[in-house]
Image 1 (tube, rainbow, N blue to C red):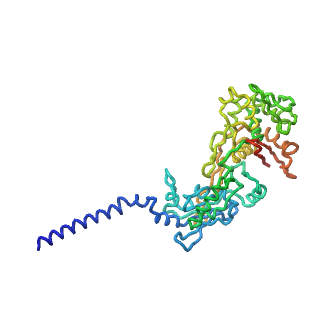
Image 2 (image 1 turned 90 degrees about the vertical axis):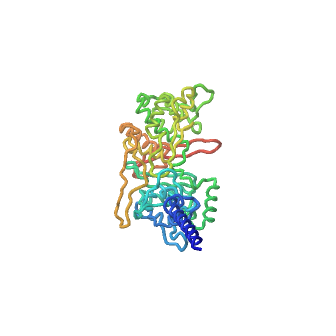
Image 3 (image 1 turned 120 degrees about the horizontal axis):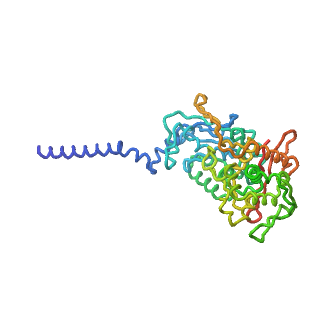
Length: 441
């Protein structure tokens, strides 16, 4: 009997040791792995329920906030201004993660940084031990509302910025979306809202102001004009013949002026009326390397350092593409062919001319403050590129002022204000066209 008891005790002791070892492995060795397992939603739910700071405009309009909710998530993310600022705030969703300022400034909003590598939902909601902080953007509510009103229901974008420091004052897209349904806590409703947005041919989730590029059309003539002053100054005094269409080399096709009009003259005459034939010939006179170099100086071919996620790169063809394709160079000089630019990029082109040839880094962050409203971080304006010389910027500015005063952009004029502007229309496939205006005052 005693032997049986001893054997039983030994078996129980070994079993207890094995159980203790298994629990130790679960709690110590495998704890991190189990916590990060995508099937473990408990940790993710707890992280999503954590406090999160405000996002607000420069003048104090609250764009995103978290309020108490009587469900498993404990807090509901709300966007009081709805779709008006969606291209800036983005969204925060338990199902689909985050975009816009919600992602860009997540480490401040939740009090901990995003880990490197794959930024999964778990990473996004997993903050540190710091207290949450509020994010103040550079956007001004009155400017944002004015931009949205001017754009109306036309598909497109508006970007307004301060050329002297790169601060984005307004950024509007249409179509747009309301972030609130994506932040809802009933996941079936969230998925339905997401599917509806994804299936919308207008792409309302796309922040086209900085993530989509288009043929810039005649607004690119500002870059071509700058190239003439910077790289072939003899072209700035050349009198180009008055033509209705330009006979292009290596092809039997011609390059016409808009509406079949006839135009010519010096560079200022050409820009005033947006003369296609004159600027196309100027592009041929400059040559591919010069024009490509000037486009690069203005930021084409490089991702702008915007502090929002995934800004698109604007494109100008490699000069090698023009060695046997002079017609392509002529069309590129007027912002067509394979030239593409985001609305943000063309705003930066105008900003360079307004700011003595210097492009400042575009940004939406103004400052970050703690729970006591003490400012813990302010954006420090930085120079991005020297696009051109102050002398060239002054010469091109004077021509753009003339465009607004008595050229193609007179509708951009404001009584009592000196306005510099350049219009653009880029013909695309079919009967579609992109209409542009870059301007400053």
